[in-house]
Length: 420
Ligand SMILES: *Cc1c(COP(=O)(O)O)cnc(C)c1O
Image (cartoon, rainbow, N blue to C red; front, side, top):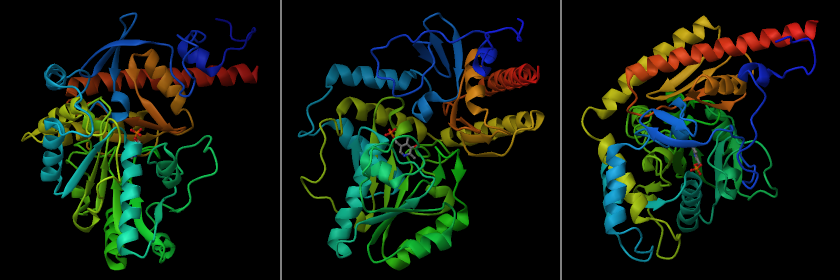
């Protein structure tokens, strides 16, 4: 290929060896940038597209598929529940909902739980619960302080609590929120006033690029909440249900939130989220929270299957071991390619690159049969199945190395092209 005759190829073309394929459908609203492939099958850490190409999946639906693609326990739980009862309706009890809420409360030391459909919705409900508590116990205080690089989802209240997610914010925003820099205790302290009802944080920020709270910070936040008599809300949508090597990541920090949100990995790939509350924060009354599919029996059955699997003795230990193995491999590769800082707990890792090439690496990786995501322009995120094997990790590292090389070569070709 002669690079110096027109048309000049883009960096993407160089990475992919060919211009982009056409989109598979223009009926679909273009709200999310997606590659052209259509995926038809999945098993464990592998996905197949409609042309039967295999891809190693180290995103797993942004950590939603906690047990990988179509794990037997989930397939069976969904099949059995589908046969028995899909949805009696949210105004009637169903077994899986009762069982899952009981189990979640038991394993997390919570007093009450509630099931919803998405992480944003769980965060939304957490905000409502905090405002309710403020009405009852803090003279109507409703202000919530969160971190300026946090992300709690895309509904209006969740978005108001976030500033991390970019793009159109569809002004005006919901009032009653303020933001302070993450891991900055004095800034948080200074922001609290009589109108503050809660502090809402991700213990490890996912969308910001896997940025963990320091232990000093999170413990300090908890202490501040206790001293001032306000609520601590921890958003464990990304970090919870074993992702970081313990059922909740708050355990690793030795912190206890008043309200916890769960999502992503809880459903193992089906839309399921949860709101958990402890002690004084349990203050919802009849009629204050409702949704057609809240506590849906089919989704709750999936959650039960996931939770039962994750709490089996030895499972989380295996997650921690695989996590260390993945971290070591990524550190070696980052060193070899001169990439930056690596951060992670369990099987949630973020790697900062030496430049803003993360989207290019994701595209090159896809070309090499590897699925990753880039939460930031200079950051890759790795959230494989909690059941990922060492050989899957080894294979991923080979493919990632090829993707790094492909991007380097394309960058050099582009620069040469410009120089001529
Ligand atoms: C993904 C995520 C959400 C939003 O969850 P959705 O299911 O996409 O609405 C909220 N908080 C955190 C920490 C997340 O990672």
